[in-house]
Length: 349
Image 1 (cartoon, rainbow, N blue to C red):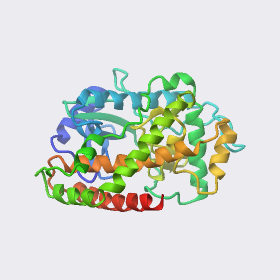
Image 2: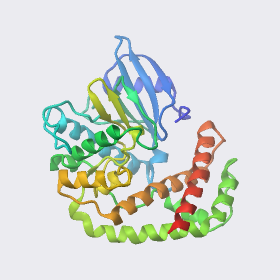
Image 3: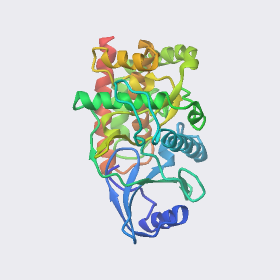
Image 4: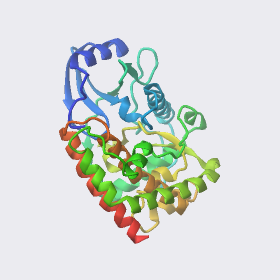
């Protein structure tokens, strides 16, 4: 996120870090990286460096009436699975799509457990805080994979995640295939009164009204695919959820996979829909490495879920009080582009 969350001071953050991880904080510096969570670089009085991530639990809810505790529990489950996965892969032998095998350190950038053994802690009612090792390395942005090497490295990491020991999966929640904040999207599509809650409320209402028919058709298509996907519950694995280039890093030891807040038990297609370059080579390699052939209907399901989730989350954002912040401006531009993309997809079907 581009700006720190309202209601969380640096003093409160430093106190929470000291209480939960017993670190003596010297400075906390906000880092406007990523989109969804808030991040700070933390330096201790002893010169150690850490990376703190804060999630606003209101934004992690799947429905407006969902308790914040439920959002926290879902986030905790994802990060607990990440900690278990890191331990399982650290120094172990992982399956690969190439001849590269053998012992290596884990590519999973997992949170550091608190002194109580938890993967994160609550800060007041609205926030969840996780602490990570500071990683010095090359970062990447959301979008296409810049090189074939990068794409194949992500495939290798995903094969290792999907074939991790079964006891790792028990920590994570199971994907229920629901579109988060669909209630807000459904309300907006009914073209009722637009809430007077901020500068983008009316433009979002007008934008959706102009594209209501194709949006409804895509929601219907998603529901059909989701109903069919329930027949494949026997082929679920632990999934990262968002293994795009922006959630990877490369340090001197190799490739890393970061940002595990959306980890779930789900069909492998949840991680594969955006990985193949279009010629089937990556999907074939995945099948060779795992014995599981990706199914086109499930790839379509998760491709569509990605866009509908972003749409619903942004619509919900602008149907709640907002001020027109830099984050609001960025979300509005993303939403406009997404609506155009979805309309074009509907026209191409």
